[in-house]
Length: 526
View 1 (cartoon, rainbow, N blue to C red):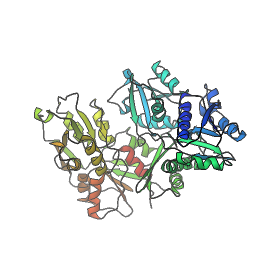
View 2: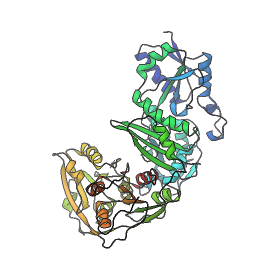
View 3: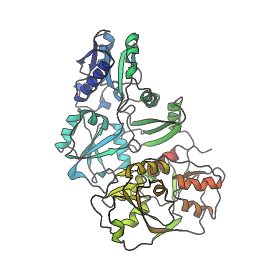
View 4: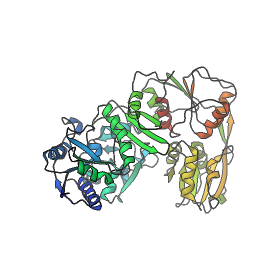
């Protein structure tokens, strides 16, 4: 085969991508050279992308040269590529993608650990992505969002010049360029917290449809798993008829038993995003199912009961209120401390402290513990992480799944052979502790107890959310489910109570306010 010509944009990241593909081609015996092509998105830097006409601001000129025959391959960031190929062109290969998470880069004097995302109140964040803006404001409505254009090094330079307090970038670009960020605070936002753009972190190798020999030669570079995952994400984008300016995030992950997909969408960048989490056995029809679930005409719950108090400005309240859903929040239990003074023995030679609830965090720090700087913290989920932040500490491990067995397995692998302190409720099931290896030392510290309220009034809500096994016991001591009521259990231990009762329930992906809101939004009242 003749020497191939690879077309690419001229940014540092685009050149890294093109050189990476050229190296991969060499590995399968194909020689290539690079041709730099300037696109509309490179030329116009004073306008937001959603103010430009048409689509494919970073890809059209490459496609034109590909169709004209002046290049043989176009290497794209797949998230920039329109979901429909021009006639005569095709995506020949999608290599394994880099992580799709986001980096929030923060000037160190603008860090406030006690706040969600570690950003000080009212911080100015730079991004021109409507998707990022909508989701950021959903998590932190106090932030000020300002436009930010330019390639990755340029954006980081503007942050260092203090034009912004923080900026958002895709981790993939920063990692590929190997940039030194040691002078900045780096907060990695997982795809379950801030949902990435469709195909974020993936590359697309585009060729002419008529080059069938080249198509076959490129197949060793194609990663079927990545292709299937981003295929779902890009189909969702296509069905919504959106471009890069649409406030849409979609991330698909293929697991051994099927697919997990997170989607966030808003009407405008200023609107609170609706979110949805779906599991499916295969990818056939999955994108259509996601888009259908966002149909505003479907019958959603009119009222939701949750067995905890819900703050006026909490994410869960704002998510449900914008969809016209009434919230009835009341705790059915009371908690009391059973330790008032912390024996220094418990803190000697500790490597980790693990919290399985927000109550555990709050009761532990009320004891004013004197902690070594080397101690690391683990938490069961983002709710406990937010509670830990209020006391000025980061979590070194955060459970990302609502399946406590998965969280336990991940934590056990991390702390094997170390010493872990567990401040907990007296009636805790101790699932994490029981999953640790024999060489891991467990120090048990019951610090509060739970008391069930009596004579609990039932709720007529369409959906009942239970946030602990104790709340289930309290509610059903005096009440039964009404016809048509649906149940959400915050985690496996709560769900086991319903298994014992023979009651069907929904389990959210994550045991936090985002996960609960996603679960409610995914329900349809029958």
